[in-house]
Image 1 (cartoon, helix red, strand yellow):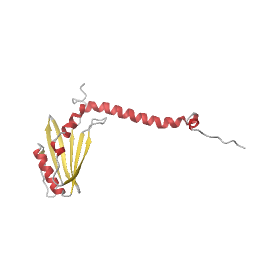
Image 2 (cartoon, one colour; image 1 turned 180 degrees about the horizontal axis):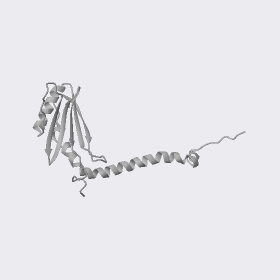
Image 3 (cartoon, one colour; image 1 turned 45 degrees about the horizontal axis):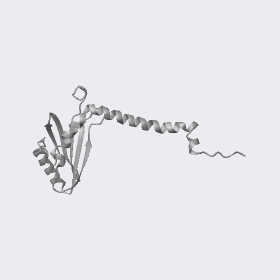
Image 4 (cartoon, one colour; image 1 turned 120 degrees about the vertical axis):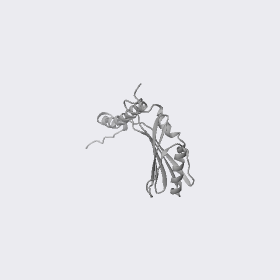
Amino acid sequence: MARAIWYTAASMFSGRWNWLILAFAAPIVLILLHQLFATAWSNKCDPGNTQFYLMKNDPIVSFHPQGELFMWENDGPDNSWLCSDASLSVSHVGANVNAMFEATRADMTSSGWTGGEIFLKDQDFAVYEKVKEGVTLNAVVRKQALWVEVDMNAPGLHPGDYGFGG
């Protein structure tokens, strides 16, 4: 008659089960190292997130059109390996999307953004540009079914620009 073998937690993770610890620990450590290096590298792309804060501190981010029920903001500072564009998106949700779209376009112009021409009768977007502290910011105001979205971005600093200078 075979004798029953009782496994305990300590015996399960010794010997032949060591691979299980390595299989879970190695990816977790690699992900943490990847994030640490990406954050350190991205600080060379946009030191102190200065380009991101040019958008974040723009008056259009704090604008609330008449009829807005709520607003949400999606921040996208440049925290990547490839020095991609910093971005910021603001969405205004409300019942009268047409009025919010026109009010947002008017506030963009009064905040110093240029462009925003409507060329087609049913055009549901407007493209803007603003030069702030020597950086050209771009924005697109889009009218969606239930909200108006303002998508802004600032160009990333790439090798050869002043991001990797020192």
